[in-house]
Image (cartoon, rainbow, N blue to C red; front, side, top):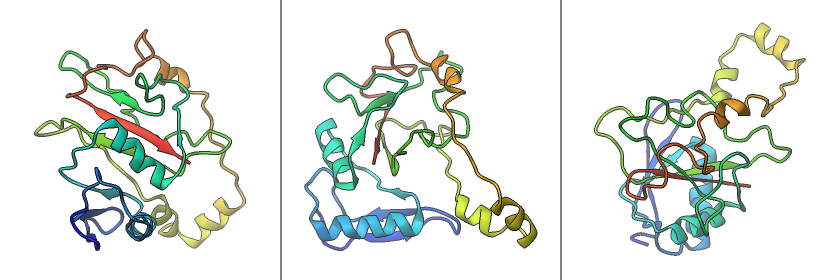
Length: 189
């Protein structure tokens, strides 16, 4: 670890913080993990730049936040069933996960979050967007919140066939496996 106290820089008013001064490839002490968890709770999404993580280090990091789980509709990497590879090649016109979604909230016990590791990012485009649903609710009118307060939301995997249409015959997301041209993703409970 480069530093015992991470540097936290908020990146937007509604969501997200960038964290510097930590080498995620190295074992993290309990105090650092506690600080990262607190930052995640405060900012909802946290980003680390220029991290060089092996798949083993990625899994070790995921385990510090919770129990990694397998994605139910896409086969994980050999030896790493909890990691799915997401890649889009130049000839592909549709990207895996390219619609607004919340990762696996339809499960009986949904994951607490997802980790993404960018191996190669295009010079423009290729953005992953995040939305602060707490703030969206809090900024609704009192009347709208009152109306919504009596409703119950249900998450479902009924539209999983949309995802399935984007999965290759080998059970992988489009473009995989290309270790130098991908995102690796793991969800943790």
